[in-house]
Length: 246
Image (cartoon, rainbow, N blue to C red; front, side, top):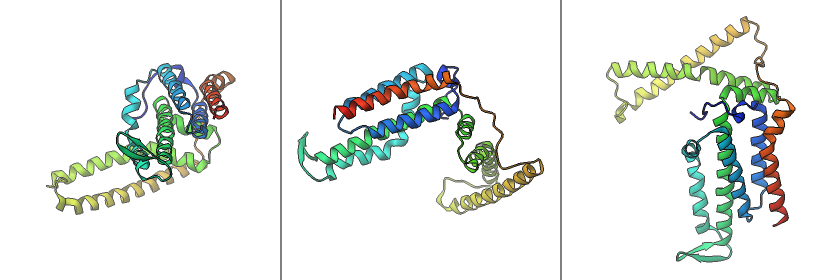
């Protein structure tokens, strides 16, 4: 579960404000010159301040940042495979350009993941969808996301029931020769989900469905935008200083 319930000022901000702020923060991180190492530390301090304000423990974010491991592996390999001038470090010959490229991926990728996790930790999935709708995202996108969130638990429950039925009939998913039964179960789950989706769509159309989800979000006032954009203004200040000092 990415969302961490809370009643902080960050949690109470309208979702559209947090989405815009997260996007602008990532833009600032990406636009920062890779050689300005101090700037990435400043971004991390700003993120830590947001975590403190939202009462989100560092461990909550760190455990979920493991998703970035493949990019970390790529970043660690690049100093060995890069070309150009080389330098010695701990008895190893490393590429200067490769080391900078790896640092660029590691620093910006990590901060981007942390910003996304911060947004997810302080905003429920439904609020995210409503925020996108408030930002005039394509109606098809928000509708698909809403229906996916609403019926994902239904499909998961159906999958659990099918698994229980298979096990009660002697199926043991731990053995390799049972992979065929597992594959057939996945196919049956897809067919059932498709049929359920058709029934749900017909029910929605019969009740006056117009192709757009109802708007139940919170309107963002000037105060909310000012509070939400404060960290972004600080990040933009860091970016401007990093560009000038390059």
